[in-house]
Image 1 (cartoon, chains in turn green, cyan):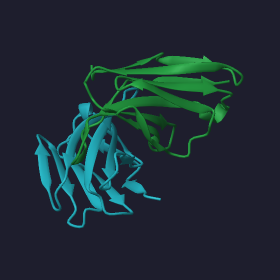
Image 2 (cartoon, rainbow over the protein chains, first blue to last red):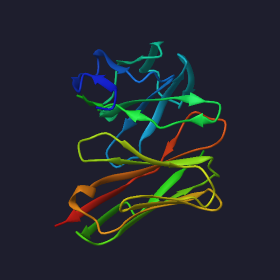
Image 3 (spheres, one colour):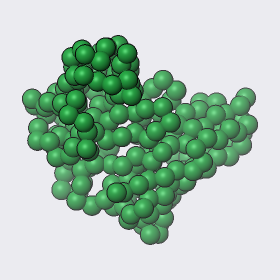
Image 4 (cartoon, each protein chain N blue to C red):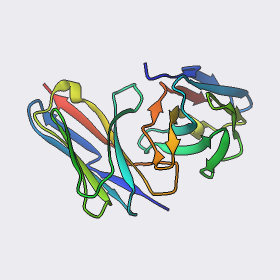
Amino acid sequence: ETGVTQTPRHLVMGMTNKKSLKCEQHLGHNAMYWYKQSAKKPLELMFVYNFKEQTENNSVPSRFSPECPNSSHLFLHLHTLQPEDSALYLCASSQVGLAGTDTQYFGPGTRLTVL
Amino acid sequence: GQQVMQIPQYQHVQEGEDFTTYCNSSTTLSNIQWYKQRPGGHPVFLIQLVKSGEVKKQKRLTFQFGEAKKNSSLHITATQTTDVGTYFCAGTTSGTYKYIFGTGTRLKVLA
């Protein structure tokens, strides 16, 4: 157990559906991240939240909408996705300080399939 | 934008052979981390390197950070079947909170 949980673990949705991915960290960290991992591609950073404020949006399409209500919870709201959005979505958390960011702890991921 | 490349993309070795993966950044890094992802799993932190020319060891694993802080390597001595997985480097530049992950090297160990 890494202290970062994600639900659901698997999700199949149609292109017109709306769904949400949830991430929760129990490590007391102040930063949370969403990554996308597709086959044959490196991990792609999508969003970064530091102290609940979004500090990075890596040119992610608006059909992905993040929400960070507090430093322990992170959501990714999905709507009108495309089949090419099928991937493993990983959440991570870390402690960010003046010296930079520390180790990232990853959740188990949500395997998303868009039909 | 900043890119982090890893070579090789795939490596098959016989159990007991050594293995090395190389990580190269297009920009100077403030530090670099290495992660291992087992098949079907999620990335797990291995180590962080901060200083120019730094070398760290973890049992059979040796990590090195280049003098120019633009490249790094991971060397595994006498591989075991438990070493199977994809090894990622992740670099960050000073003043940012994000890590750019490398393309990964997938290691397969044949018993």
